[in-house]
Length: 277
Image 1: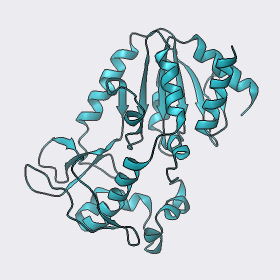
Image 2: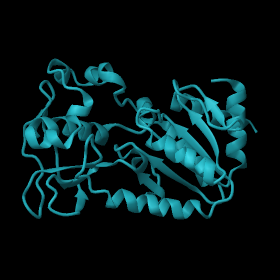
Image 3: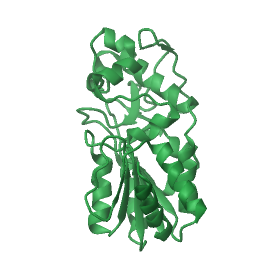
């Protein structure tokens, strides 16, 4: 993270008439979320799964809901409880403040399923959750296309073994096991109507802005959904990009800004520069 990069990022933000926040998993680390990068990171967060040699892609799979629903909901139930109780870090508020001062406001595109943009006060009309949300459920069969809130489900998890110990949620239409409305690995049953509608609304808003700045945070190349969206906006909407990432901060265009640092510290530095002006 250099002073020049911070100043250039502040210039782009100060000149923009709209802000698009593009966020990957790294955005949540400053809130205390576990870092799943590599088997080591996942197994540090879930030692019970390390003992069994179960990697992230094997647990986060619709197949696990079929073969071992207590394990599948032990993992996702633990995550649901964690996301419900963890407070979003101050960087969310900084981003919202920038967007609120712009002519056309702000939106967000995220692969995160934690619901923290909503918790931080981001409006839902311009928020696209491209991999779904853990706070929504769907039928695991599925018997239809219905998606419904997970508000009434209170997971009780044996953390030592990563197993759900109370009754899992059920589809109210057919009685089959319910699962999170999240895009998992090898997932042909994910119901994407909610996420598709969110993205359509966001794109309609983007068509009306003039000087868009994209602030991308914690989005890597391993799961490149967020990066692809950022690059699309640069290529087809003439957006300027501020990429914040500790390890993969390279930007596609020379006039974009690369900040090699964590999300919160970088946002605080940019905000301090903007306040000095």
